[in-house]
Amino acid sequence: MAPRVSGRRYGQAVFELAQAQGEANLWGQDMSEVAEAFEDAGFNALLKHAGVPADDKRQATEAVLSGVRPMVRNMVDLLVARGLVDAIPDACREYAELLDRQQGRQRVGLTTAVPLEPEEVERITAFVSGLIGREVVVTPHVDEAILGGLVIQIGDRLLDGSARARLDGLRDNLSAGSR
Image: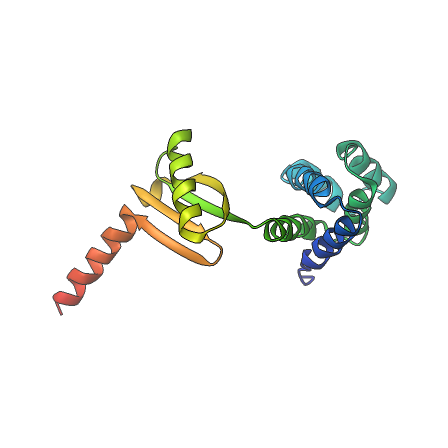
């Protein structure tokens, strides 16, 4: 099995080019479009398939990413040509992280057992923003396994206020007490 190549350096290179041209936000929109396109399993499979000629792959990226700046599409075509299709989402994530850092934003994962109303997400966003002193971009997720409460992921920090974590803690305390 071939080693997995990270797309981080490609994301960083594209970010540096965008900054040099003063278009980091615009290129960020393009990189988001690329990330969205590569969530499509069929598109990924086409670009990974060894039996598909390189010209057909290039035409496919051109058709799907027609609104994307040429330099961003060049990065995609380069990675596809090198057989590094799996590195493209990494490059997009790296670009988004660098753009967020430049603009003082922090992406935050918010996991709940049930979908939240927009007002609830806004309140949590305001709370977390006040907690860390930065603008926050919340990405909500639903995971019924947490049973209730919420889990907030801020970078490498995890704030676990889920019912599942509380029950696990109670179980551990009861187990320790019975010994």
